[in-house]
Image 1 (cartoon, rainbow, N blue to C red):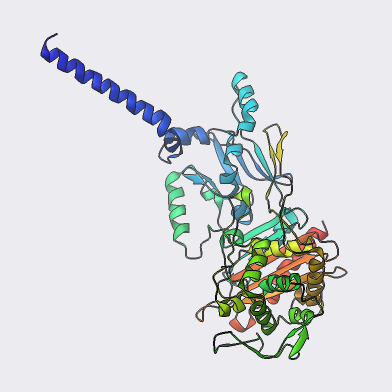
Image 2 (cartoon, one colour; image 1 turned 90 degrees about the vertical axis):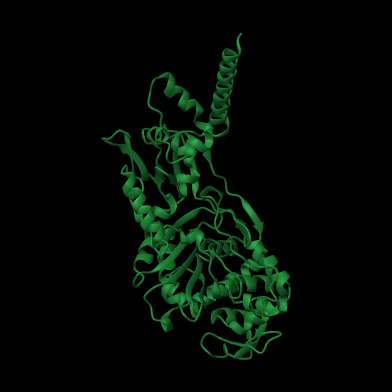
Length: 486
């Protein structure tokens, strides 16, 4: 073989080897990335041409795929878009959020549990279909949560979570402002991008599910955790005397903290029940200072702080109780200020644990996963995360919270002929913005069916009228009634 032919042969061999290496790289190394790349139109066409499974609340499909008259064959439709968008999320040509994302394998029909279904479809030459996801949501409770947020004055921002205390089932989860996921499901991809750009640029953050994605100071609702830590120490019960008075001087500081109304909570020494009824800052500042950071942090973590647990919705933002707080910060943490932050879900978990004799149940929103023929592939079983407090402590706290609804700051949550346990909270922010209003509750107190947390982050309410009871109490009441009366 002469030299020119040899050179050409070697060159062709190198090109052939390069082609093999590139093909191997694309098929085995980059395959996942390429299949998920939003610019891969083959994947887009295949995905939109498959009948995606439904997301169900009761018997109603709040998200489903219907035949379309374009090349993509199916159109994703959300029947009650704004009310359920924080839960369902959206299904789009460039990604998914919410349940559409966390349960994508099932809904798209790619889950290994649907192998037999896919095989049957292939052998029968039928079109592949996705599985269905049944949610735990109570439609009446969700309606009450959504309507409550919608009725807040002005362009409000807030969130609501309702849990079934004994199981951890999410009965309601609402957030405002919200968005229309139908706009993301459009087959006009330019329009989808414009929608995404507009909503992501909105400083109200409508794409965030505030129920699990927003952490803010929980204010006086955190006094439940402080009271729990005090009773668990063995030195206190509902009738124990605690400091009252007008002011508390922070340790290692000249700063004095007053009560929210400037009063003395009824005296220099009051019962813990009275301290809860009037939401006495001095009492809970004193208790947190006495208990110390370690005991307070241990109790907070027992309720779920510093961790995440809502696995079937991708996890919630961590509610934080830092373990490195100094004495002044620890005292302030006793009233839900300082560096303490919580999601509405976390505060609902605190209320639910008290209602459930101290057991913290893992929250979940996916009840069942079903095949296209509606056969059940999997069912979520309730799971206890921790024993946050003893049954006796839970009983003492319940007595205090019932009194707070009967004669204290939480009276807006009263339900005729039903014993309700509840607590208000008003958390200070910065001098430039109004406080955050919180409300937590559960009912019936003697046989709890529902625990609720309400956060009103902002609304067109004058600063001196912002209070957890006034803004959040009626919303919590409506949700509790919806569950109890179903």
